[in-house]
View 1 (spheres, rainbow, N blue to C red):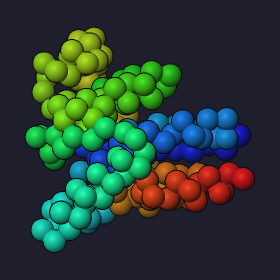
View 2 (tube, one colour; view 1 turned 30 degrees about the vertical axis):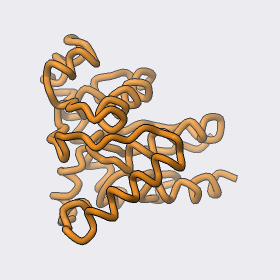
View 3 (cartoon, rainbow, N blue to C red; view 1 turned 180 degrees about the horizontal axis):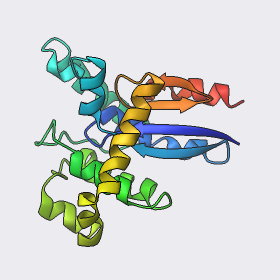
View 4 (cartoon, one colour; view 1 turned 45 degrees about the vertical axis):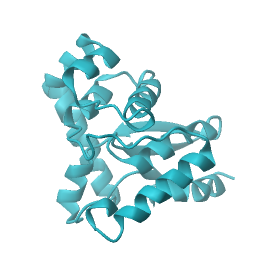
Length: 185
């Protein structure tokens, strides 16, 4: 079975949409959930940032997200805390076991993009993931895991998220999932 690496950040709405579609790969590929730091990718690649930072693109992006949420039948509520610094949230995801990570990712995406809650708020984050997991975010190996994931995405050629890698080939954006399905045939 082929391995499909999924690089994502909770702050990315398109990664949220992509995450809701990952179950479609079950039985076709081994999906490896790799939390990465979008800001770190932007900085390392010279990417000027997401569409919402360009005044002419922002209205389109928000309309596009509404269309996608309606198409996929998933909730979407723009978080008041957007964009947000998700370093701690991404470290939480790195601290989770490989088995826990998909469900925890969905839980955090649902809170942030589905309900518009500020998952970077320590009190809410503790409520969502537990104090024990949150405490692990200060451990050096967890910090290093987030750095490693981010550097791996960059090494594959990622310039943003969601980014997917299969057979050392980069696929960027949730709108390219159909090409991954095609490659798996």
